[in-house]
Amino acid sequence: MTETVLTASETERPTTATEEAMSTSRRKGRAQRGSTRRAALRGWRLALAQLGVLVAWLAVWQLVVSRGWTPSVLAVYPSEVFSFLKTSYQSGELVEATVATMYATLIAFVLASFVGVVVGISLGLMPRTERVLQPYLDALNSMPRIALAPVFIIAFGITTTAKVALAFTIVVFILMSNARAGIRSADPDVMRLSTVLGASKLQLFFKVMLPVAVPSIFAGLRIGLIYSLLGVVTAEIIASKIGLGQLIMKYSGLYQLEGVFGILLVLAVIGALLNMLMSALERWILRYQPPADH
Image (cartoon, rainbow, N blue to C red; front, side, top):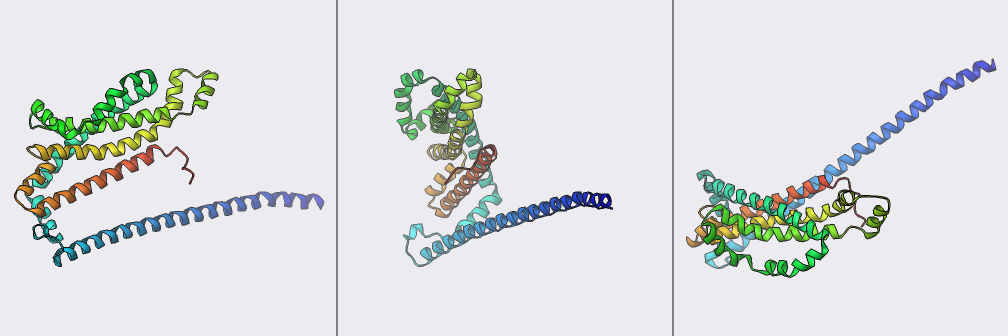
């Protein structure tokens, strides 16, 4: 009879363990679902708060214009701006100009990112060369870019190349500086320990220095994309056949401020979207890194 009791007890143990495992799994599932719902709720709250800011801004704009608190030449209602954007979109003018501006922006950004990151990393790895070139790089970086616009226009004409060249000179120094700083931020103790353990120079670069430099490089990329857009628009304002900057100059000359404000609004939206895109890409690339301590 004792043996029978022992056998029954033994057969009950796996069942109890299984039930406990299933209960633990259910609790984890409920916790995950609860965490997902809370994250979604926070996202909706943030979106509503941002929408509220936009509505408040439009209301203040409408109030300021309707009360005559601005000079008459600047008195443009939000409805007039949106009406202009609708008309310009339907005519194809806005789409064509936006495509031309973004095309030059992306070309300048890609070229400047490649050159800036490569040169910045190289300078970070060669401190002696950096010390020799530093005064010349600082001198070039301190030059006002807008002063170079006539030079590029004379060299390349009123073309996309001139716009790309101006934006390139702005963005390349941003990426160069961030890449160099990222490489220099590698912990010297980790570098020495890796060397003692037999790591080659190539392994030091790819497994120690480059992972440390990636956040700094991505910060430069995010800023560089916005400055690439600003550089292209600046070039278009000075001289261009097509582009958002050219439309700003066109409607400024015609004293159609609803057109100027409309294009500025389009540029603000494009800048915000580009920043959001780069932030999302940065979070995805750096997802392996632990969250920063606060």
